[in-house]
Figure 1 (tube, helix red, strand yellow):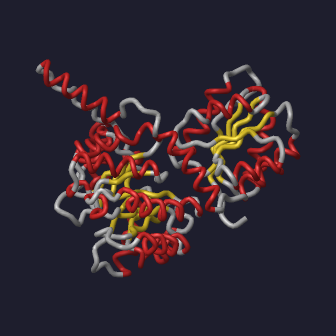
Figure 2 (cartoon, rainbow, N blue to C red):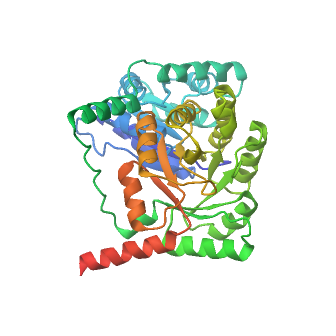
Length: 410
């Protein structure tokens, strides 16, 4: 097996036994399996479990999903209601190959009443190994995904702007977001421990990785030159390696960013933070921006890696931020990110909230970075909608979280 996969699997009562069989099979192959339930043969509603699987895939937490019910059809219908998911009910290896090669399906649904365990294993093997590579098929898949974005009506950002206008007319102010209460380890798992200074040395990278191991940070974020060293130092620790691409200006050609991303991924990166072509965005060349993002996203998806799109919000108008978010969603990125930390400003609560409103419905998350130096900063960003934090002050932030927890417990 070339690369272990992260696979979400779920079933209703009718598919429970087959789910358990496939879960064990996937684990024996070395894949990481997320069991989304059910946990017994007691009657349950299949849409809940199909949706749980689909949400794992749409969020980027899982590379593929498997949902099992009696026929496989209802779970496919439910999963396909989750933005970012392409679910296919397959009853043969040929259908599984077609679903992947022609349709780039990312969730497989199976009918336990129509598929025995041996057949299901063969179908699953094909589904996990086939790839959608022909350009004509990829173009048609892109059309499907554009339908998802083109349902009409108001976007979340539009709704919020209307609500803000109504509040202004009524003389009201919006309620302050609730500040989350997080344990120190929860704080650590939100943080990409970052060192992007151009003068960083191998000793600095070693110290960064040692801190990440000791503190349990989610990842280290480094320049591409340090990916191999970081991956070696962090092997077996559970801490991921994130590399920046097109950093910090974003002015490289799309093919150069894709090449840079592929090399970083080969050397051990599991996440890529890429800077968009800001000039193209400001010039209204959305096709170039989309091509720019998509090249890196596709490189990431081929290696089961997470892609984040850096907008550099301090340099953008609100309209440009919204348009950049929508392009990132169209390109199937996993995250949008506020800033490089090398421009005129960093993350703001307002920008994080705007980005979250724009992308959340598609299952895309927000990373806040740039100028985040305290626990209060982290909590404000999380309350505004961020799911990940980039900071070079991570150790200090975690020390604050531990001190706060100690005071609360004392």
